[in-house]
Image (cartoon, rainbow, N blue to C red):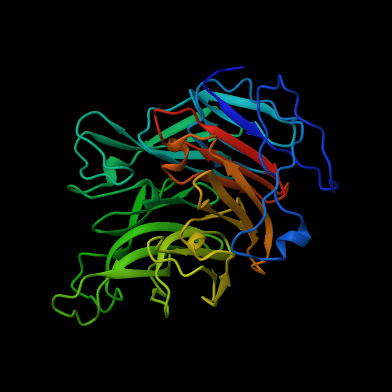
Length: 404
């Protein structure tokens, strides 16, 4: 077992009603609390009882070399695990099915496309980055690496050839069509669409235009994602009033625009500030500002733009929402008031029903509580993956995998 991994595995059977086998004292992966049962999940309280149910893990992570830094959705029941290498891991069989050298990216995102996967990140030779937001293009190479389904590297595309001046980008400023033939990306200058087959760039929204009304007051576009059968691009942005009000700062907006630039919709919402966008084919998750949570999550249908608000169990969790691989569920995290761990909850997107809940222990380590956990939910096998400490270099990652 690689000692850099601090893995906690919880694998619950759907038929498990009560009582489980005690983890062997010599097991290399410890136990963690299980999700609540359906009857418990329907009883929403501010201080739910999250009792532990230990079980024996059947997953095998021994072949993962190095500390796990991130996990990304792949196709089916698979995930991409980024450690010393890039691994394709099958949650159904519990095996590594492919691996590849890890690109030297500073921050990265992955997309599933018809032919395999694509990773976007930045390689820095000079200068510095500030988190995922990059302050200048000097010395930074923005790259898209295309893999087949066995993680064989097929090609690499350098986006710097499309950038002008010192445009600012983040890895949230990219999105890829499902066939992998088109990439949308946002800069300070605008929102663009690039066709790899035609080697052609088109402007979807021109942020340098003086037609403020025509672009609905859009000032900067921060996050994007394809939706509506790749006919539409959803976005999270900063906008200004039209006409502009002197001295009034920009404000948060969310919306959609067709890939040809038509049907632009840039919106605000009553008593709700959207801060984080997660885009799917037929639905958008719009999470709110974590500093002023209302205890709700806004879900928008695409196309159409109809919205609904789901009320969550606790007010504070609504600022930390993670969508599942295909959008059937979403997960939230909230630090336990005693600082002993993180409360993880999984909800159904359509109904807002609480599906599962568990407390992931911090094992008495303050660094596990210093930053929010990373969460992935796989819809078809109803599996939740939680990472603690994955963004911190001074502590080993703790991973909890559970079924609900």
